[in-house]
Length: 248
Ligand code: ATP
Image 1 (cartoon, rainbow, N blue to C red):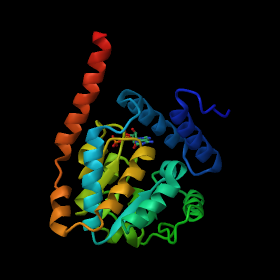
Image 2 (cartoon, helix red, strand yellow; image 1 turned 60 degrees about the horizontal axis):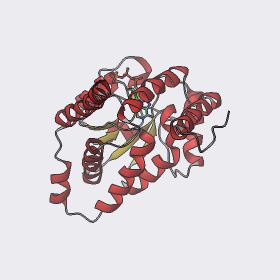
Image 3 (cartoon, protein in one colour; image 1 turned 180 degrees about the vertical axis):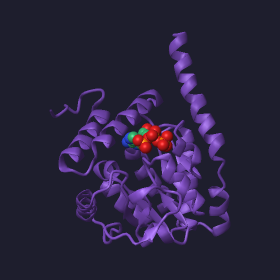
Image 4 (tube, rainbow, N blue to C red; image 1 turned 90 degrees about the horizontal axis):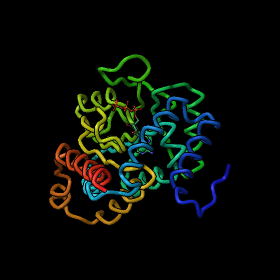
C-alpha cells in the first residue's frame, strides 16, 4: 500500500515501507524487521524529531570522524535499506571507508547489500571477503575485512551490544545511532546518537562538511563528549514527555 503524503504519519510509514522493501529484496533479515519495530516505538515516544541531545552527539561524532585516521562505516541490512545514499554521502564528507558486516550473515545477503551501496554511488565497499578477526565474538560475526580491522573509529548504527563491546575492547572509538537510549549498545559506545538513522545521517554529513576546515584543537574540544550524561539527559526528556501526558 502506498501511503498518501498528506497522512500525518507519512514519514514513519514511508520508513516502514523501506524496511519491508528491504526485506522483500533479501537485504533485511526478518529479525531486522522486528528490530525496526523496537526503534519505531522509541521514535514515537521521542516525538519523531531530532532532540538537542542527539544534535550534541552528532556534533561530537562529526569531530571524532574528522580527527580519525581510519574511520569506517559498518553497514547492515536495515542501514542499507533505509540510508544507502546517506551512507555514501557520509563516507565522502568524513573520508570514511564503507564495510558491510551482518549479524544474520550470508554471502547472498552480503552481495545484495554491497550491490545496493554501489548503486547508491559507492566507489568501494568492503566486507565481501573477510580475513581478519575481532576478539571476544562468537562464530562468523568475528570475521571482518581490513577496513574494520584497521579502523580507529567505527560508525556502527543499529548494532547489538556484544559487537559494540568487542570493538571497544579492540581499542576502537565506536559511534552508534540507536533510538533506544537504554540498549547495551547505547550505553557501551563512545558516542551514541539517539535518533532515527534517516534523520541523523544527513545532519552528521552536514556537520562533517561544515567542520572540515576546523583546527585539530577545535575538533578535539568538540569531540570531548560525556556519553552517559547525554543518555541520561535523553531519558530525562522522555520522562518529561511521559509526565506531560500523565498530567494532561
Ligand atoms: P543491545 O544488544 O544493544 O541491547 P538490542 O537487542 O536492543 O541491542 P538490536 O536488535 O541488536 O537491539 O539492535 C537494533 C537497535 O537499533 C535497537 O535498539 C533499535 O531501537 C534500533 N533501531 C531500529 N531501527 C532504527 C532506526 N531507524 N534508527 C535508529 N535506531 C534504530
